Image (spheres, rainbow, N blue to C red):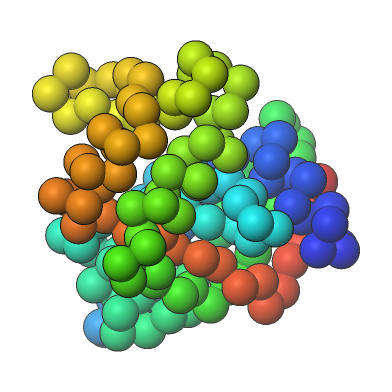
Length: 149
């Protein structure tokens, strides 16, 4: 499976299970939405999540990307956490890549915790909220890809 095939699959089917390793070696799973931004597979992260703690200790991660039955892609990856000063801008780009066709021009859809669903945000409004929440980006470097795309 080529890198371009993987990226096209992820662009079409963003739902995935993210599997990280606990300190005892057992698996921890979480549902995530992935996207392709700047030619790389990325997802959003939160500093309080179990998967973030696991990845800071051990950057190995598997993704199971769901397509319509019987299609799927498995990815063995190494994750870099992008949490520097440009993280809010990277997050805005990621959200734009995910929801580019569903938000009004100049806006991006993102989750509003108080409302409990997605709503449109301006670039400034979203980056300010992301800074306050300490959110960051997971970037997945693919080591091995397989499946039934």
